[in-house]
Image (cartoon, rainbow over all chains, first blue to last red; front, side, top):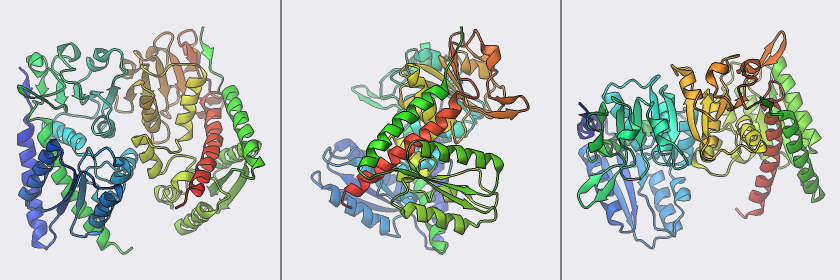
Length: 287
Length: 287
């Protein structure tokens, strides 16, 4: 029997636990706050930002939102970020991607101070992850780790196949898994024989953006399969894994929707709390 | 027949090519310079620093050296680094490790400006590597890539086993190999079955600090074996690979000494030139 990993339930538990800690912090007058920055009117981005803001408010945190027009200049966006960077009420800053094509995303992301980088996407945060230093980790990768931990799956010594080596999931998650002691094999678009990489693995994590890439031919019986893909189809949301075909083969699998997706938002809420705590420590230490 | 990869020869060619470019830069009055900082009297460190300074001078570059006593304070070392950071004649700064135990190495390394970080060990350089941005890469990992390139070994689509995930070699090299399109499996101290990871690989890179760890039981016939280990024994230098036992099994192998070792110094010379070019560009651009 293949069991489904209930990401929605695990995410709810994490968000409730953050809400408790926020309520405690609020009693000493310190309420964490997240600033979301949305440039333009991409409908999908608007939906994501609305969900993030809702999660933040539900956790009892302050919701700062800045909406900029599609035609906003690099300088205008930079000025908004700098303003939020200097605002002591703003614990974390999230610049919603993708940006309109005329803007340079990397330069704008790197204006976010490392202690407010709740998406973990700045060069400084990437360096801290690579060096194992304190920092905020990208939300989806840390959500995958939390899922595996919640399921009681041992990572030290486990064989993990990481399918996909993209900036948002595969690259940071490879490092998080290695830091936890997993033996990690990374496959990607240039991998000739994907099954040769994935079949020996105890855990297969898929984040490729290729719908239905992974199926029963790739998975060892009893393995755990984590699907970080998301695709909108006429029959609803689906992932990078052919989940129905893995029924009875995989030991456990994350559904899409309701698997990794809810964890991403839960980890954003966690990161905002961590950013607030980190910011408070930095203020407490004399310069 | 197993062929030996002649790192000394490849390193000499690279250093000669750098010397040509340095001579050209010198005609326009721009001579790159490396500053080595050595704290204390560790004999091995003194030998390494002397070899680096010699290579720099042989390439026609300026050799700045700062020797500090074993009892130097954190502030004293930091002041020396800051001084070199502001000196426009110094293209690159190398802080020789290990430092005496009373000093905090990470904080001192991170004082080196990213454009002068010829060892590629700062958090900023690690972030630039992780994000695929311009930056100076650590010398031994980039030396391994150069060796493989010089041998005409295709990395895109190749299966590489990276044995060892240390800060100086395994971590950055994993990223460099993935950026080049290799399918990479990373093994380390928590890997239960090392041979299962290494036997399928076309290229096995070993950087563990464990003498003689890898032997014929780990290597597919015809595979390329790169040994980044170095151990001083009563019978001379030896590596992490039992090279004699791989004769007739491996397709190609790097000897110790004369394989990866000379490449590390060659890449330091390359990085110093790159740092000088990068520094010149930054000065040419109005702030």
